[in-house]
Length: 199
Image (tube, rainbow, N blue to C red; front, side):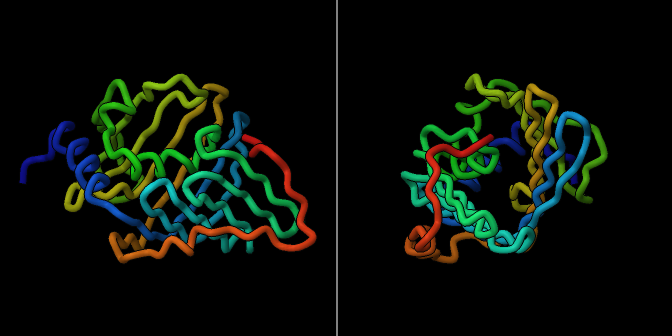
């Protein structure tokens, strides 16, 4: 089997997102600060058109990052606090996946694509680097794609300050018919609401 070309990979991902109504996966999220200190979290992710998502954290337990399509909430039970922000104002690293699902057109979102020859983190995937079109502090995005089904198995987001955020996905399921009620968030009693989500 010949190795897939860069265009084949990019078009495959764009097509798979375009056909995707919802997405469920287990995730590992690794944040690395500019001094290379790492912090790992994990849990379960649900995405649904348009722009709905729910990141349920098993570690740290109980944390919830959720979007109903208009508002994003980040709830940390240990702090008895919920942060909220309009979806369009948020530049959180968990958002790009949602926008991929919402738009599906990678070529509009990114200016340049490169197929890397580096050894992938996950065996059998192909590594593609992309440069965002919009000016934020996100300098590049690297995705590891399974060429067999065009699914993104790993996403690495690099920031201009030298920090990096990495997401690894497993047990991916697509178009299972997630209900919108899964993405509703009711602020629990006695919890402080703070406007804005800290980056």
